[in-house]
Length: 430
Length: 168
Image (cartoon, rainbow over all chains, first blue to last red; front, top):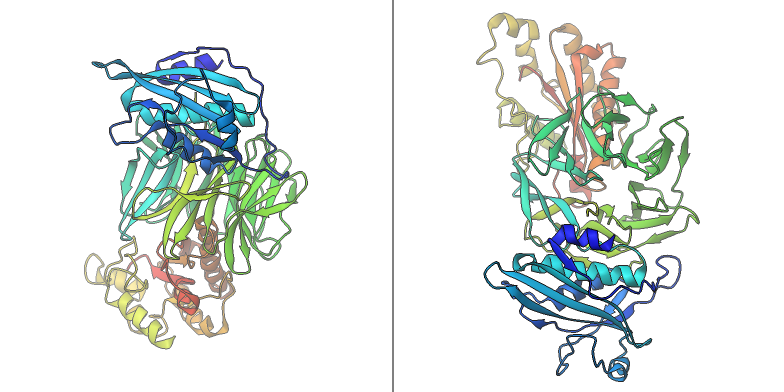
């Protein structure tokens, strides 16, 4: 399984030893998750063209999750590059619970192919957890390092890593130029997929990874497009009278929930991805918007002011049965559901400050994971362990960043000096 | 407030490229032009009562402002809405587009819905005065053309519904 996944991604992958699969599963939410001290030892061999080093990329990846505390390995003399002759006592004295060692070698100087051989070592148990070798082109240097992070993450948390996934966001320049961009999850390798002079909001990646739906104001009012990422071609999904907005993909990527107004208030509809089969979900005199499809394919979470102030509700698409989900606070918006259906992510107005919050849908406990005051657009990583959101840098310019769901790590994603808003996170694709 | 309304109305009449967005805001995408000069013949101008639309001070007022997260129409705007209702009732071919807006606080999508609630609130008030739904279209720009750095009272400029006419 693992072999197949990686071989598709990089072309070739060689498994040196069989992984042990003794998962060191961490209690992610609810427990007092303490960060695991881990040393990512500088890899022997070369860095990439931009001077980026594999161990720094891996450290940065793991650091974002709020589950690891990468140790400073800068001053270590003769760092090991394989799991042979590891001085366990020395690493234990440094407080390292795990270490990652590795080397980058040129496999074929003409084609530019490299191989990265690495091991994850458990210092307390004094044994190697996994050793692997990745082959790929040197242009894939960052992607290979992210794959090491994914593998370390999966071995130590029991959940898939998201370090090889993509994000999308809207860049706004001088209120005149808008572009929809996609990039690696950490902001590297960004490229625009749409440039326009009018606002773009609410991009949403299809769960199969092939398309992005978004709202554009190009037609002097909001309409919904679906753009194919492979071909770059786009189709108009909804251009009905009034506003067309808030696309939300169903888990099977075949349907979407959208919001239409005609000549009335915002109401939620479902529509096939080819634009056929439009159907109204429910009707009320209040605002119903921001649909977000639950992974069971049957429930749609949404925001509504039917109780006076905006709160989050869910509706069953088969029987229109509605239940209220959020009770804490007077102003809750922008629902997004974790991929296991257990956590609700949303925006809450906490005494005038807009913060990102998570509600455990089983215990209904709420945890505010950002400080505000102007945070927005929270969206889960595909493994539900990280959140992408916007904040106002120095209270002024909107930027994107990640926050771990335990609220411990909030870190910016640097994609330039412009206004960056309306982010979304792509799925895990094999 | 009166002064800013008057200024906004002037902008609308002299076709500064937008019906009533503040000067520092990006241009309204509908890019309205000065009406009655080109493309509109005398008979149409007569039927639409363009002279009246242009000259009447109440009709030249085009913006209804709201409180934060609210869409109920304040009493001070009833005369303005009454004048537009009368105009629409007297000129059946006239078509109005109401464009709702919101300040930047809160999510883009919720603000789009809030702006729509505001344009629908104006439409409902016009309906109550006998205006037919077929004469009105309601849309929203949400916070997309709002001042993203306003503070306190200054954000009030963005919480509004703008009345525009198709002919403009």
